[in-house]
Image (cartoon, rainbow, N blue to C red; front, side):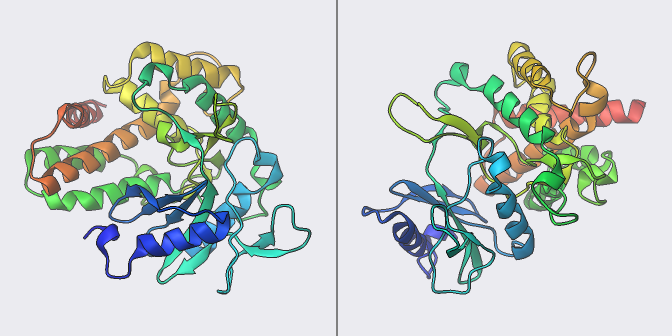
Length: 334
């Protein structure tokens, strides 16, 4: 059932939260309505209902990092949410000395956050995608010591590997199909940490789910005067920074990202001092496993979507399944 059609009118409730924060009139615009996440824009703010079962303490820790001054020109910060409900966590309201506020609130069984509305990357202009700017932001994020933005043990591990496992769980809808079997064979060849079955080694500050949809220009406005920021901190945490380069690396390896675009991205990351890969030489010994994991994740989601919608795989999904086939073949040869 679509969240827009649920009996509780979640869109209407989120719109009310947005109007409370922004003081804006006008109807809500649904930006994303996935099975587990609902995102609504109201005026100049965006309101997000996080997946059911989201860990409140982990989200709180991630939001505290997102408002850290050290990351102000890297991550889009959440907005304070006035509420009569019990707020958790509490923090200073921007511009309000010592005033308490909520970084998220509970709406029924969902955790809800509010964000400034930025200008997203235009999918109709792929040639103008800010690959270099994204690479520089990631390099800067990875260079910030975790201890500078969170206390010892306060920030959870990055959620990226767990996303791979959740994508595989969705693949059950396509059980018995050749494509699903191919994805499962490739998944079985990942090491436990890349399957979300073992904790990742401690490392850098990692976004955890980076792709071009995780960028906005902010402040938005005529002429695009604002700077680019990373958004969506649901998987922000401590882990291997190579994970944040893995999606473009995997799509390049699958033939879905032009080599020149991949080189632009990688070169800009290295030039900015990014720590995920060596400054020179072959990056693939570091990127190989995370890139394979992200290809498998994308393939699982694509095959599951095709089964749910009762349609054949599209060209991109076919390419991802073929990449899974190569992963299985090359892993078996090692």
